[in-house]
Length: 265
Ligand SMILES: [Zn+2]
Image 1 (cartoon, protein in one colour):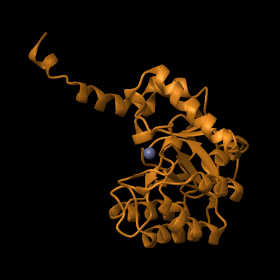
Image 2 (cartoon, protein in one colour):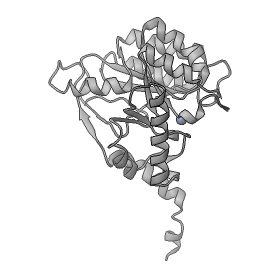
Image 3 (cartoon, helix red, strand yellow):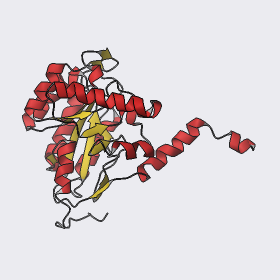
């Protein structure tokens, strides 16, 4: 083995794999939009989302996707106190989508196939027992995914969201839906710019965050920042729908629609 081969570390291999994963095991859907769509999503999710984000969503009558790892119910971590079982029932009654995020929020690349199956089954059974509709959407915990998992999970879920930023114009990989983080700081302006760009070039943009509170974690934002993003969405004229519902909508909108200026991708 040469010195160069010795230099190929597991970390290096994983970085290369991360770059290639979006190109592999794709499940592309093609569509044409005359009006942009924005999907808001919350991962894990902390109680502060219920307290500080949901009232704003209610004002606009917008529905979001909440990716739930049921094992986090009632627990606390760096994101603050997490959701309660009652929160899940309330969100469902209000028409929001509950998605799967594994049971114990595991990195799917670090557990065996049997362990992952057990995680997904336990999450599904726990939420089913609460009367939550069947989970058809999934978000990769920590955004970690590879081609093999994209392939194996597509038999369970109709939409799988990652954390790779970007806007979908004429196609989306349902096995790794792009999403922009709404985290305190420069990410907020980046997200707002992406939302604003939809006015001239309609596409499907998904956004995600965690805690929404004053002094948020590195993975969340303040209520004021969240409100700025929502105002931009309102001004963009976008339709706001949960991720699962958007996929259903796009599957029914594959035919030719009006060509919009700048829509050249
Ligand atoms: Zn998560």
